[in-house]
Image 1: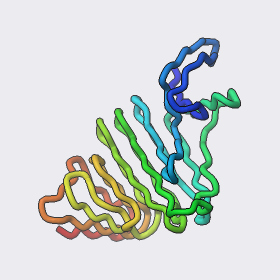
Image 2: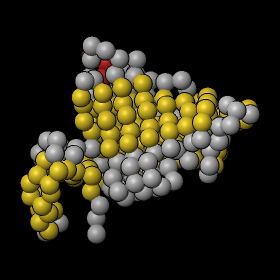
Image 3: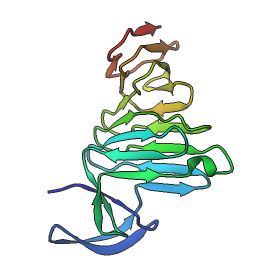
Image 4: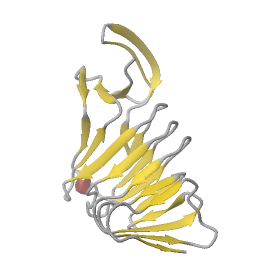
Length: 193
């Protein structure tokens, strides 16, 4: 009854693996993290994913799954996190897209301040949460469950926004809304509407 995110497989992979004494055949499985044309994509699963994204502020991001383990097919190991390295070495500004898919998912952002990195989050089905980093954050809600965080991160289909430990500003455009909740977290938080 364990849930796994399978990683380190070729696109549209098929094979058999043995885990916890059970043989699992998979067909058409996609890797959790892919890189195509300088765009990194992180794909969620059909279960409730809980991801944390943090970085070193230079060119490395660490993706941690707190709800499920990553099963690395290539090494036959369970991993608690994945590292995306050498991001700043790419010829054009890098982009990281999250597709959280089905389930009630959450993404917690730590320091993602890599030069030129743009981040986008699509929540998908379920009630999805985006948690801001522990700094002063500016959330611009420009449509229903959509907007930007600190101008470099875009989000859509995210029904719950949670600020970090510092001051947060939530700025609503006309007719924009968040359908579940806006929570400033700690600090002095301001809502503009």
